[in-house]
Length: 284
Ligand SMILES: [Zn+2]
Image (tube, rainbow, N blue to C red; front, top):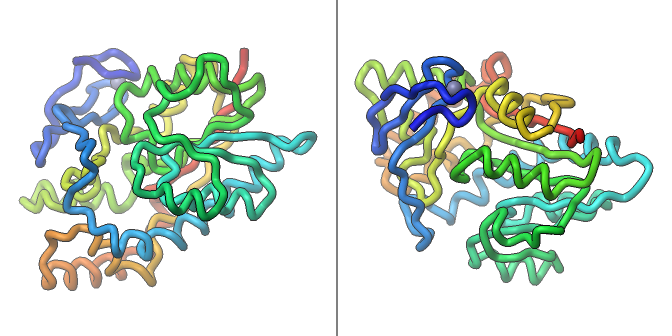
């Protein structure tokens, strides 16, 4: 296996619940031998997940939606969100008069979509789209890092965008504060934090950790040019316990220690953001 970005050799970097391999040239990290659980069951505690993430995601959408509207200042665009989950982005878009439909493989959110009147198809991207379907924008909110074959996905993004269309990738990246601290803890014999960053205990773990430059290069190969990069908020300090408690297997003592630790370092997270939103435009 070679690097999907630059085709250089990969070498084993971290031995976690799954092996993580790193490119010696561009630094892209990949998890090998991941088994995607289509039964969608894991150590993920769905009861606290919504509380842990909703306000944070809405806060970050407040930086993304105005950019989309500004880009399409002369007409009302139609977009598609890949992996729309609870439908938070669809709802935020609707509130701001932005038309967005969704694709979601898990069927358990369908009642929410029905209640909100959202147009969502159950299935996997890009197979679920007809070859001729085109959108003004395609958005991935914490999703691109979970999909196998990033080059194939990027090729599909180019194919399904209209000319001058926008690709929006909201994603955790390498070398953010929490990612770096997890690596330090791994090297002193505490691998569970890095396992958590890769979400290896959950049914949809990360397959990649990209840098911003990795994403810019992978998109450029498919004719998608980076327009803008925005740092996003990584954690809601009101929801630290729920965020950690997403892992049902964690002990109360460990949760307490981690909560205090994360509360203390969160004010510094703006110096090394873990989440970025990259905006690309289709050229050619
Ligand atoms: Zn590489």
